[in-house]
Image (tube, rainbow, N blue to C red; front, side, top):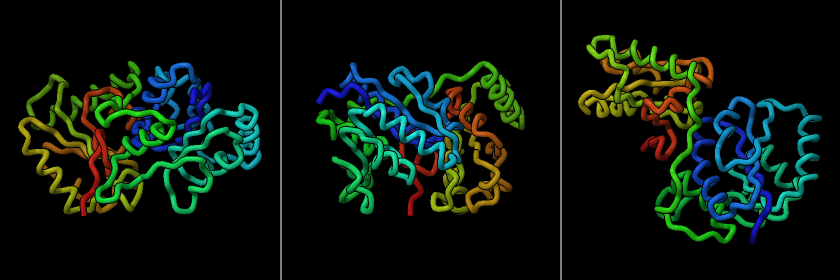
Amino acid sequence: MNPRSILLLRFRRLGDIILTTPAVSLLKRHFPQASLVYLVEEPYRRLVEGHPDIDRVIVVPAKQKRGDFVRLIRAIRKERYDVLLDFHGGPRASWITLLGRARLKIGHTIKTKSFLYHKTAPRRGINAPIHSVETHAGLVRSLGVNFRKEDIPALSLPAARTEEIARIDALTAVIASDGSGRRDGALPLVVLHIGAGNAFRDWGEEKTTALAARLLEIPGTFVAAIGGENDRNSSAGRPCSSVPTAARCIWPRALRRQSSLISARRFRPYSARGGPVSIPPKP
């Protein structure tokens, strides 16, 4: 199959969108003539805008009125995409998949939703978990593309804006000057995304403290916990009041600040998801 147009669905969440970028690059590598269109919610558009392999970005609000959603589906139906890849699997993505008139619909194997797709790829292994990057790449494999695990491209992060770099430099200086004696701004700082916005991804106080302690054993390493205001009082967030001086807790109110921490490429981010930019909670 040589598709001319491919619609990609992943509405939200910082890490989830970033983890789709290797699959996007795989698509462009094997189908260079295809136009890749990425549908994403407004707060996360910067993660895919400017991506070298994405030709167009469709941006929708996080809370979409019914009439606006109907108009969106009509616009998608009019395009008649050759392929639809559903990275998301949520309710809106399911309606778009069902009504969008794509010639080939591909999604993850989900018990109650697999009937929506012409082809599916497993999200879980038989004997072991499958990394999110690999599951997304599996959707590309459903198009008849053969590749090894080692052939999957790296994650793609948006370039940091000048004003964001300045803010991160200021934040780094604060952390570095607090008892460390460092002022050069070049810190091996590991960022832990506490809770990742969902209670079921909460590592818990004991495991979070143990992980931070292990990371701090690496000479010269600083640890920062990052999350929204709702993560501050989670069981994983509570250790922030008693962590060593080499660890700090940061609670940026806006997604832009969290995105900046990653896109400035100064820090090594980890969250409660499995992956190159994250490590999963263990039972």
